[in-house]
Length: 155
Image (cartoon, rainbow, N blue to C red; front, side):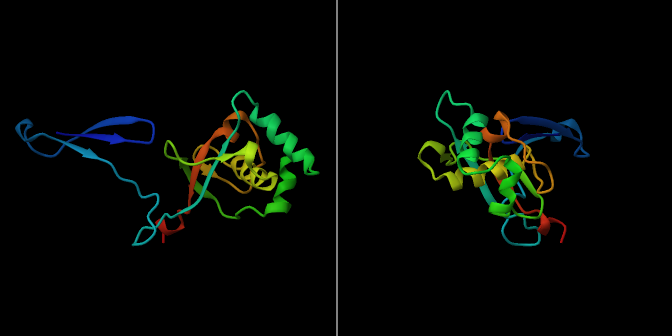
């Protein structure tokens, strides 16, 4: 039996697999690898975008983003599609590493805050979908994500 510990971004999974031998030939092996971020080779899933907004402590992200939106003359987050032309293909998302830089909204230009808010509103925790409605929630606006193009995975 082979016991493999798989380490994810925020989780630890342990799996047992039969190696075909008696119990006397068991071993432990730590596996830590990802196809995400591969820029070259047969399997490519390059990172194309890193997103993350840092709101001041105690500030409601949705209210803040909505205020910036209306101050810039827009009435709905979906209006930002015409202003920023988000990527047209779906991407795979994962949580950005702890400590990854985020845009501090209090010191940033409104245009950059709205661009990132638009893209975050088009993401779930695992997928960027340009066809979905832009949803601004506390969860979506406070995520830090890396978006990967998985087109090379199936090439």
